[in-house]
Image (cartoon, rainbow, N blue to C red; front, side, top):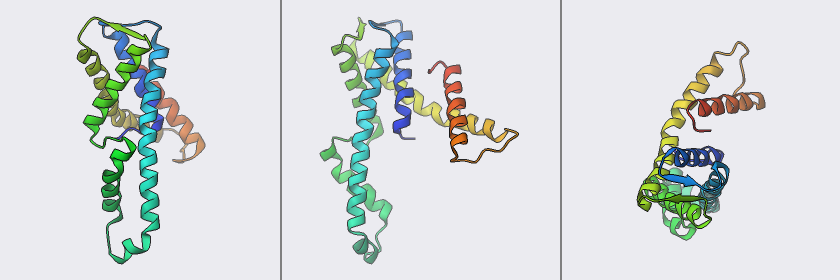
Length: 183
């Protein structure tokens, strides 16, 4: 699963909570500023990728006739162009490398803004941030399945994509995150 912009606050919250619970990191100004700083960096990273993808879509649209004539696979072309342009947008496509890099950036920001103190090796704190990101990603599908199951058991059937469905989904999703200590 890849992160999307709506996930940023949840991932940032998990990072802040995991740092607070670690026992070896002190949050100098509390959970909120840490979560806010992490969220800003996560959103910045996701927006860079979104800009890259928009540019790739434009390139494909501009060359649509030629792509059809050559019988090229648009999905494969999308990936190839994205891979080629990723360095120009400072986007790392390998998710493990990307989240590792993002973890370093978050740690650096938190330390520079004096939001955290620690007396363990920097790598241990960075790994905690990385594990929080990966932990959220692993739990996302599980939580989403639970929420979808609950919605399917509602007496009144909700229409996927409707405003009411989205609101109920969001509420149930956040309830599950709270139960797991991620919010």
